[in-house]
Image 1 (spheres, rainbow, N blue to C red):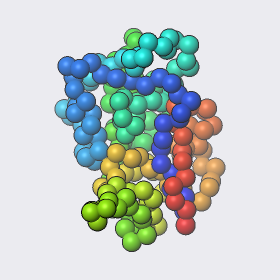
Image 2 (cartoon, helix red, strand yellow):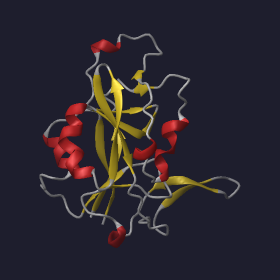
Image 3 (cartoon, rainbow, N blue to C red):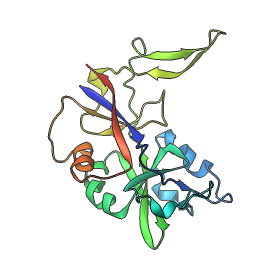
Length: 191
């Protein structure tokens, strides 16, 4: 089994922000594992351009994030490609941007699959246990070919394959085969 974490691609220089009046907490609760569709009130979004650089010179991503990496946002093209394979584990919540509909990816598939005994944590001088620094998973609890989150690190989105495969319908293969730009699948665990 191979587990990947979805990470922003450092080559992607364009991320989204929301106007101050909307407040980040409207999406920061995407790590709760709860569906939002019934009460969805789309935020206004724009490209982050706080440092005065000319962002138009950068490639538009197919997948980016809003303010923090746990809040992935996908382009209309990406939506059309991945919607059929994520609809049982995530919501694609519409957001208007630049005369198009982009989608926030809300993964509600939270799984208690962390192998706590074999994971590693930041330990403070006081002895207090901090965040996860290296994850290990219980193979029998990890969903195959599905996006998922774990309660112990709910801001991180994971994907697992029980072996490297060429399943055309896996989100990883769809993203890679179609050269969708903006995230990377980083191997974080293998058993």
